[in-house]
Amino acid sequence: MTPALTPLAKQLGIITPSGLTFTRTHAGVPELDPRHHRVIVHGHVAKPLSFSLADLMRFPAVERIAFLECSGNSARGWETLGRGVQFSHGLVSNCAWTGVRLRTILDEAGIRSDAGWIVVEGADGAAYDRSIPLARAADAMLVYGQNGEMLRPEQGYPLRLLVPGFEGSANVKWVQSIKAVAGPVYSREETAQYTQPGSDGKIKLFDLVMDVKSVITTPSPGLGPLARGFHEARGFAWSGRGRIRDVEVTTDGGVTWMPAALDALALPQSFTRFTFPLMVGERPLIVGSRARDETGMLQPSLAQLIAARGPALRYHVNAVAFWRIGTDGTVDVAPA
Ligand SMILES: Nc1nc2c(c(=O)[nH]1)N[C@H]1C(S)=C(S)[C@@H](COP(=O)(O)O)O[C@H]1N2
Ligand SMILES: [Mo]
Image (cartoon, rainbow, N blue to C red):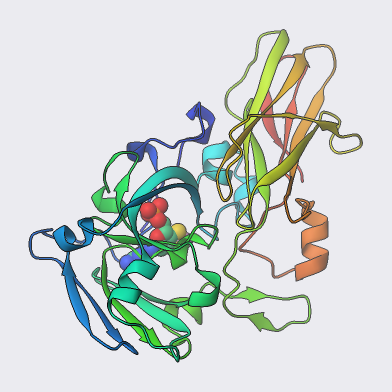
């Protein structure tokens, strides 16, 4: 199914409105009646349990702002489409999610110490399932709220898994089963898909965390022609590994870099907004942004990414994106 893409160029703040959130489904959107839908928690637990949505909403609730990015965002090939940042970068959203901590539910069922992973299964046509390593998912939530309202059907109503920082595909929607297991089950979506080739020709499994990335959303291709004179370049930076430490912007295609201003609201695993002043019309510009996260990881160029991960690189592409702004104010994609 063709995904719907977040119109990032029109997103003014860090929160993606629910109705503008990208949607990616492998087998359509199931219609689930929240009065009858249940989630079972079983496997390596002392006490298998079954919950309705109402049951889950009685547990202590937490809210968390987090980005959710499909590992196919900015996949190789899209950059040449030249159809704007919605197409090259729109498989990401950043929402305020409300729900119950996964830990709370696992503790309620008495998860056993020999359970290192859980298998989370959706109620869609494909019974989509993924293995989640608990040691790396301390922040995971079972989510029923998005931006202050109930989840939308496309986003997994009545219940989805959220593991902040993990690739979109690990965030199972329409959750109906959580099974505690000793190790991963190697389901279709973590073997035939969502694996990464390394430069040694070997395939990496469970490459789950999304790396540091940023993009200038305005100006961006398709928004021109821009008026001559001052413009504020604006964009978002995010990292699955924590907070954004800094963002730099270039106007000469990456020869020189200057610090961008970061908004004060720099949350972990969340969009962080940045701005940079631009003068349009005096000379041709090639603008781009590169972010660094709190672990010190710097967003790479496409060439660096290919050198590190091999020419088969397709997913988990976090390379710097460049836009060319002509002296006439037109904005297009510049080769990375
Ligand atoms: N049950 C189920 N969960 C799923 C999927 C799916 O097809 N079925 N798609 C996954 C993929 S590939 C992504 S990128 C995210 C997208 O979440 P969104 O549609 O809410 O943006 O959901 C993930 N969870
Ligand atoms: Mo995805």
